[in-house]
Image (cartoon, rainbow, N blue to C red; front, top):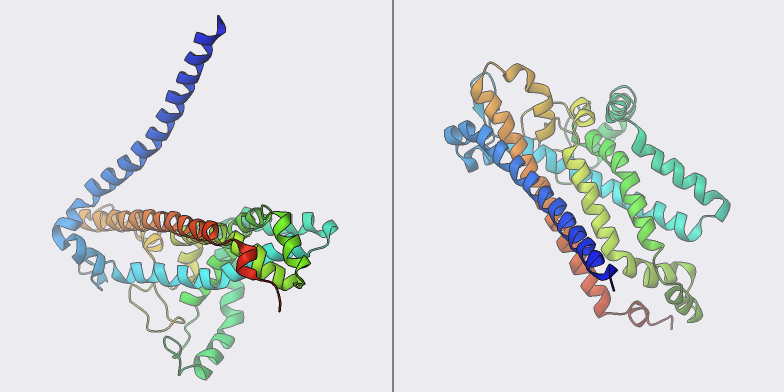
Length: 320
């Protein structure tokens, strides 16, 4: 009985300590936002918040700063990265968790995770010296043959949106694969055995038992990969072309929010408006990242509710 007050005091201290740590994280995010807003205020005062964010005119020589080309470039390259990287990551996770021989799972998992250890500048240099010269002919072939499709066609200059998106797809592969693999490992064995007992093939078992159960985790992993792609700087700077215009095709040159900050911040020290515009671009990137994380939370919750509402095996029904 003598230990009871001490135990309760320890519980309260732990609760308040963890609450303080969580509150500190929120306070840090708020401090970042307020500080960026204060530093970016001269640009917002001159051009307006919406005028700065949605004006297609970034011209340092005329001291005009509209971040729409940077925002569009960030979204295009991140979308390309998701379209290429997520299917490959989900397929890799499926192979490792369901189809790969047991003795090869460990080495294959380590090889995929080692991609995360490669510095981003190395990916960028690999893109400059290998991907751009090797893929330019293939990109031009696609541009010529598929010119009837929207956003495809024209001359391929070398650095472009597609190369940047391809580099980002490789960079997000480890995190999306790792999270998806861990989620698939939590699928109850009973669900898999029930599907197989109903006569399902291996692929039907994966489609009706594994993928529906893992849907929330896959959505969350994809959104985390998107956040990683949005914030990437050096690799994108080296391969996107650094042209402050909105390209008409995916093989055109462009710019991104992170790339313009890395390229121009050094030369903006003597120009307060330019410096404020770059910090405003950082604030737009910060808000965009927060929106992506909120969207990730919404997708995960929505997928989780859908999974609880409809049991997987009932949804499968079994083969006729």
